[in-house]
Length: 265
Image (cartoon, rainbow, N blue to C red):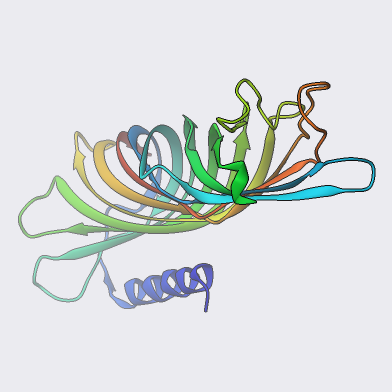
């Protein structure tokens, strides 16, 4: 069972368990929210494939493969809209659970991971590929907020979600120290793709008043591997002609820290 199927099964199971508990009156309703924050992307694999045309009948296949830096800082912002059901409890312990379903849109600002990639044939040395990425992510989340016996205004919560990421790369660069001043993607350095995304989040929410809350949380966001096609190398008289270049990026993972406001109707 792959990651997306496991996550879907987990969400269904969690909702079923929450709905089986005894319901209490009082806090059901819709809400909206906005948030922003910062974080870092984790290293991932990167590879470039193509061919250099030596003459009209012969081409030299090129394959460079490596990984990006261990950490690249990112910034993000987002909005959410959801519906939270009445609190549910399993006895007189004072612990209560509020299930919610929400839609969330996240924008991850431009960050530029660079892959350090040994080339085959080895005589061509090392390729350095920089991919300035922005991402828009749309997620459907299940969120479970806990009321503890210790506070009526501070609430921890957990959430999980799945959806789709829209990835855009603009101004990519493929450089080799043996060919200074040449970007091997120069005829078209822009490309895009879509991929499955999922996230886990954990945070604390504090009520300012009946309608307004503030929250802070940690998120782990994962975006499946993606593929891009960049333009051929076009430097007449300086570089042999090439095919278009195919770049594959491995699964992108982010550790994110955000804070925001939530308004309940």
